[in-house]
Image (cartoon, rainbow, N blue to C red):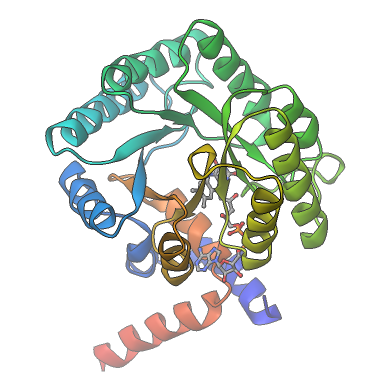
Length: 302
Ligand SMILES: Cc1cc2nc3c(=O)[nH]c(=O)nc-3n(C[C@H](O)[C@H](O)[C@H](O)COP(=O)(O)OP(=O)(O)OC[C@H]3O[C@@H](n4cnc5c(N)ncnc54)[C@H](O)[C@@H]3O)c2cc1C
């Protein structure tokens, strides 16, 4: 990122919400379940799978967490009715983790109860480091209680991650770089260190017989992962690549054309703001993007 892009990232929370909404439209299916169904239908037709995220983070009341769980249940029912190839990704804080661990677990169990009869997977997203231990515990307990189609996310930027990967033998694990900025002692800050950690974690997951969901748009990492998978002779049904809706679709198309499984993360819902900020902050061309849009709205007003 250029210095200008970095400056715009810092200022992004001050950009008016309607501008943020417009700029981030490509990262989000839309406000409703129908929007998600429409987007997943198109992705499936292109040979891509989906994992759907109901937008909404840390809640302050039990009823809000229950409402998010109910929306996931409705989404899973709709995927089955429409014969869509989609599973779900849930955020523990959206399902009440910061209110009460057991409440969160009951909500995740409600989602699993809707997913399991149709063999759909429930991915538990990883949030900031204050939630890592509880999220891994939740996944471990659910798996120990017999729910095989549940799995966590590991963040390569955390220094603990290789050792966490070693404790997850046999699980299905999504591996990503990690989006949250954490205190220096627990997080790699250097891009190359994060990449090295990503590759080491992937090796550890494969050593442990895990199903690896490789979630990145970093071409260097995709190439390294492909090489590793080839060298180890990992069968194509033992891994998949994952990407975010609206990010580097051409790279995803190349993977699909080469016969690799690709799953797209499809967020939908009315609580679009926090997710949008995170995606925009990662866009390496953010300065031009914001300037262009603000510029256009200024010119239109004349
Ligand atoms: C399917 C999926 C699920 C994820 N789940 C989690 C999770 O549970 N917890 C978590 O902490 N993080 C999660 N992430 C986010 C992840 O940690 C990274 O923040 C994000 O994927 C960017 O990292 P990268 O590996 O693509 O590498 P980067 O180096 O950030 O990006 C590589 C290249 O991709 C392009 N790019 C990346 N982001 C954008 C963007 N927003 N707009 C335009 N171009 C872009 C740029 O060309 C960039 O140079 C997930 C990511 C994916 C793909």
